[in-house]
Image 1 (cartoon, rainbow, N blue to C red):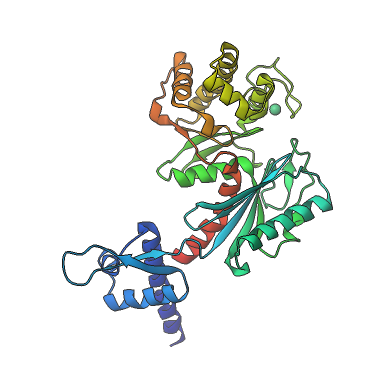
Image 2: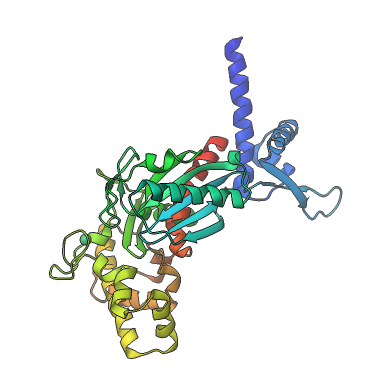
Length: 379
Ligand SMILES: [Zn+2]
């Protein structure tokens, strides 16, 4: 008797989740469509829709056009019934993004507070996160969690940073944030967070190499539709690939890492001006000096892309801060450089460009909680 009771409850839950998942995937649908596609009885579907609506998970909004009879009601999920918060910590600033259940950044903000490994800093960041949530009128139970993207390698158990040469934050712990926040929270390596967002936006990809062109360079490898972590969590750190062993000194202590040629910092140093001004001058003034700096940059990038394509035969995703500055002619130039002396040619479709700029790691980090919620709701 007892067992049967549990089975019935489980079945009810499965049906509810199936209906929610279907609506989530379709984005907009009708009761009739759910009945047909899920091959579920009309009364079961109606019952589940009522429950989901009462729980605030779905809404019925507007009607489909109909050729006769009653118009079908349009059903969709409520994308902001839950919100995940993503934070991107950088040396001189941090970003906060509020992400809905479709992975869209619905609010974002930047705070010019430089990183310091002090109690005051962690207090300041967590206060700003709470203020951001309050200002946007998100109730506490709406927040799925706060996911913090860090420039540094995170320990496999997620509790601390194990390598943090940029921010000198190898002492940073999850508890520095978690103890001050009334929400679940977690740390994420910023490059991997960026890769989650790119994977989310390119769901069709099985594999990819992600170049995170941020102030500091980052990277990630996607295989089997997953971001590859590695034995000690440093898979995809293409920023420390050596491309010239006599090159400039990298913050890691070695010479000629890709970081020293292809990070936004390296580009700014070469141009002796902020990135925004550089591109403005490059595109409008078309001076040979600026063109040369940009060509050098693209050639170094292409060198790394060509070599990595030999390791992972997949599309390449250009992501992060510099990505929105890439024009079609830049992609074609990259391809020319890649294919100039490669045994295997890459084509235009293999180079993808991300669109979220400097917010990419923050948004990508937040997706962890979105996916967790959707999985819980739908599996
Ligand atoms: Zn290095």
